[in-house]
Picture 1 (tube, rainbow, N blue to C red):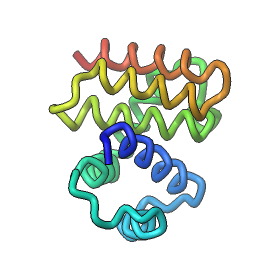
Picture 2: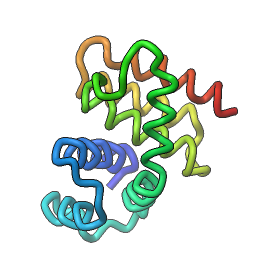
Picture 3: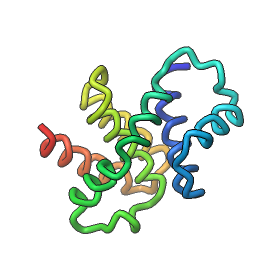
Length: 133
C-alpha cells in the first residue's frame, strides 16, 4: 500500500475509534483484520496509531488551544480525525516533512469533509506548525 492510502486508513481508524469512544490497542488489531490490512509491510499505520495513543491528550490539547473559535467537541469528527493524524505526523514522525502532512490533510479534508473543511484544516495546521517551531 502507498503511504497516501495508509494515511487515509489512519483517518478512518481514528474516526471509528472516536465514534466508538474506544482508544485501545485491540481496536487497532480489529481494524486491521476488518480492512484486510493485517500483512502491512509499512509500519506507518502502527507508528501513527501508537504515537497517537501515547500522546492523545497532548494532541487534543494542541487542537483545542489552536482552535480558538471552536471547542474540540464541536469539530466535525472527520475533520478531527484528519487533524489528529496530521498532528501525530508533525510532532512524532520526523521522517515526514510538515508540508507533506499538511498537504495530505488538506486533500483528505477535500475528499471526506464538507466544503469548508480543507480551509479549517489548513488554517489550524498552519497555526500549529508555526507555534511548534
